[in-house]
Image (tube, rainbow, N blue to C red):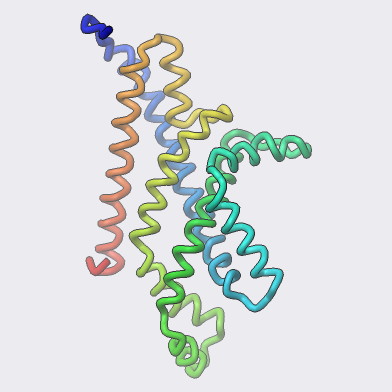
Length: 224
């Protein structure tokens, strides 16, 4: 039933480990960029959902609902295969980046909306009375406070984005999981390759958490 005579071949993994590290950098790059783009869009979506402008509000609600209530894999397929049906052919990298940015924006929008709701409305009136425009009030007063309140949920979303990049292998993207699939198929050392890859994901996630704590200490004097 069990093969207890299995012989491990770790050197097979070690010989191609530099390639796996390069793929890991692609994974981190996609995760970080999707978070940056997602956060920028999420700010507008969170404000749009509460907007009195019907078009702005409708677009925001539809985006958030689709992002949060459909599988991330489906969103990647739509970006890669779905758009291709209309003659819009994206590379695997761009398709995954676009899909994860879309997904992150939906989740972060709801997180930010809760942050905006926690800011007293009197702060807007006070800022405007000091001569600040509405844009300046959001930029210098409201948004910095909101980002501080939702810092930890944003960090959790970053970890999620990192792990979800693995879905890119299903559309041919050679991030860490995709490269692992490719390399292990040449040697059939499945256990060794996937175990090392799992450890690499774990280490990357822990590095992100550590970096977020250091950044929080620097930006918020350890109060977050």
